[in-house]
View 1 (cartoon, helix red, strand yellow):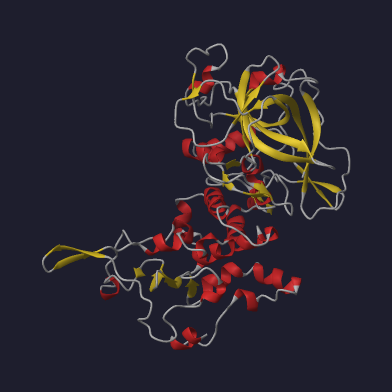
View 2: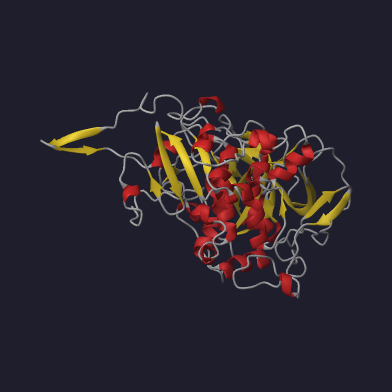
Length: 487
């Protein structure tokens, strides 16, 4: 408050005070407005110099020169010294402030910030950064590009920027960044980014379901969790949210499937995948009723697909008899009502279920340095047929049965290539090099989701890819067209 008065202002917004914590209606209403609050503020005060809210703002009270960190410099020649200057983001990234989930929206939406970090005061807007140890403020019309660390995510509302980056790309990148941060309460996972989700939902003209866009639901489900070798990052469930959403997990979340598809195709290519390489009819269980999730493009102006839209265009589900000729796949609408007292949305749908075995042992040698934990999948002939990226890192396992549901066709191998030398009979050529099928050829891979029964419904346990030929080589009882309720 002293600092606010010092700069000649009267009003201060503090989340912990201005959001009434014991009034759920007021709290929830305020949460939805946080993006507007930060964006509309004159400036945001970022107190990143300490590790808690009690650290205060250094040099505001008392002697402003007390406890200053000495500036590092070296004498190059008599009378000439060079100072070592680092960008403010270097200090912010190492701060406790940057590790907190609730500060993410501050960074993205604030037009101007006063930053207390590194025992200094910095000023940052969307075009300039001024610091006490540089001369940038003396030449305000000159911009040092090395110091211009304003992240592109701050351009979330910039109309011109919309022509460069697709909102789905923005959404997934922003969530990937958020998932690296921590929350005191798991239940805040979506609330803490509601200011980000709302404008992107509006841009995509689609509702969000547990943080995922329904306009490309099959694609949004294809996220995986990275568990770097040598780092303690096992991941875990957030039980307040469904396992099929990013919000249901604490961990390093990535949408590599989307990024690969987006980087190798234009929007039309992604739409072609949605229209012709997916088949599941998704339902949500809402108040005991089945409600269809995906709103396909309709011949009306508000939902007609335009050039930069990523959304389904098909009017009805694709026939699956050609893909799975040995199964009766005509049924797509779940038959049973499912009532479970949970705070989140349950999915209900039909698709193919198979059983394979999984092992921490991967045959062959990776051709690239592998820094992630992956499991291998094997068919009923003990043939290596795919990879699984588990949602939670585990200790070594050998040949454990795992149930997999087939989500969609896959054009590109998303896992590191293997050296087949001496193991040509065990490793399919697809796994020995970066694989990408052409649009006109028959694709040979499926995206699969590992699931496990959890009391009243299934839960997700990992994302993987398998050879399509593995379906007919699955373990007993063989492939089944199955109704799934996923929580």
